[in-house]
Length: 480
Image (cartoon, rainbow, N blue to C red; front, top):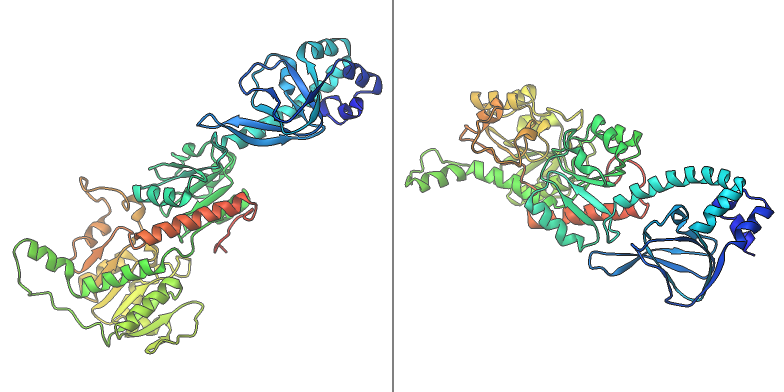
């Protein structure tokens, strides 16, 4: 019986019957009952075990020193193979789950066998080569988990509100590591030992970075935002990295911020507030207009765009809607329109489209020239939708009456960081901040408690699906 078990163990599988009998004769049988401890983690090991019947629980100690089961050893499986070559420390505790029978061979007896039976030594060299390769793979896998066997996730470009929301939703399921640095070729070394990186809008995920991440063992990029124009999806597909995003976290948050910019610009809220703080209660230059009856053009009618449409319709605006995939509009005074209609007829134009090649600089010198003089332009979507140079010229000429920007095409160098003690080197951004009829907010339209929690919830659910094998491959959850 023992010879048959040994025949199925890789170390001994090529041995002939006589050699197997020689090995079996050196092994000692041990009978176990439930709860019997075969060996303890950290203790010196002097022997290898082969399980004939029953099951052994493989356990390791967590942070609180309690034992946590990480695997089960079943009949025909081996433990302590490295102990055959010396007194190696046990990597885990083995405890019998019930009645069991195993066979033990000491390293002293095994070394004697190797010296006396060349066939065993030859087979052993081949097995060790394969074993070491597998151990390397297992070690790499184990490094992606903490001592409590929780999958580790590396968060880049993290802020206190990011950490708070994710810790709230995580409930200690994953081991979260937060890095303030943005992900780039210079910082990706911090992703060593992780399987998943969680990135944001200004992290660099171009082809060279993706290639390096794949070489480091990264298998998933979990974007904690809707946008993914900073991710080289083709490179991710080539290297087998799964990509997931958060298509909708709180469309109301972004929509409400867009409308807040409209109202602040229209009623000169920031200028009025600044005057009052200085004791100036003059109303000169603060005349606005009624939103009621004005024509608002909404470019992009996804979830955020639909929320904006509802709010503006509630104000009594006439709303013109453009979307690549138009849907039926059922709200009174809301209809689908062409881009030219929006450019020529709108008093307010607000952008809620994704940044793709055909939408880049959808607001350009040409489109601005078609607009009503004094038009208000709002962008809370992606900076690249708007040509900032053309906007500045439009503001100077008066063709553009006001602008509210939560995003900026070159925002990566500034947004989310404190540069209050430095000079802005981006001339266009610096110029935009000097206009009294321009409001720039630093990509904060998403920043509500509800949105942050939704982002954390969806992102962690994306990770869970990946962990469960439901997201094996690139471009998932809204990524085409």
